[in-house]
Picture (tube, one colour):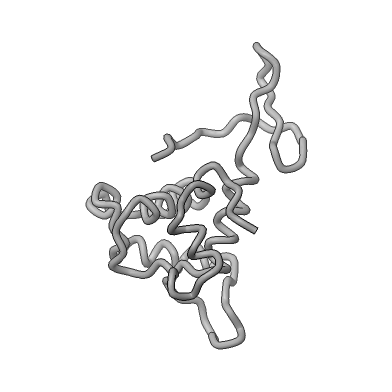
Length: 134
């Protein structure tokens, strides 16, 4: 199943990450796909990423530390070959990021309404601050 969140669904690199071990996103990577991961980490957990890494769309030390913190908080570990979380965005990590970003999406309520409807379940919620899409 492909990625579904507005942030990730049209990224070829991140959709590949979802299905292929060789497409995992690792420290040193550069590109729009890295920027999208950074945006998700900032939006979901407010994690700190160095401004130079953000400006360069670079998976540097602070992005790696943020990925590790995100994975530790959610205990994302592939128990088939890992004993602890790592700083790589692989299949499980991108799937979790995508699910959480999809759950944050909303459709506006009727004009003038102060309530919106979450796309994932139809529950009422307050609108959230949105980051511009890359």
